[in-house]
Image (tube, rainbow, N blue to C red; front, side, top):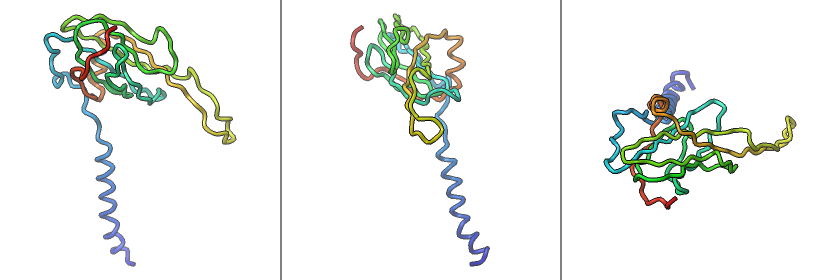
Length: 175
């Protein structure tokens, strides 16, 4: 087989793989403030966001309001939910149950708050057996919810991929 024939056969395969890799690495759109609708008149808005740090957990816990799942915390992502005014208990699914993990808030119409989901690594882990191929270890994920002021949260959220927003699809259980 000549070199020219080999190149003609491999060139389309190489070009196709380059196109496939470039298409599969497309990113989510950033959270541009101009693309986010205003808060509906008789509702409040809760933003949920999470940084992406090199050694942080990549787990995706459910974020809950009054015990009902309202979204998934993506590493390095943001989303919001528009909710009726009232009292809300904000939590993220975790292995440990620490009373300081969750937050309680009272929201008035038009109010906007920012809940940052923070992974807390290295709480519970072990196994493995060392460097002699001792098998897999285990690691349990724990998350905390911290409330941040708008001036600190908005610039961070504007740089994160946006994973959606809008009103809740179902009523939340009372708290």
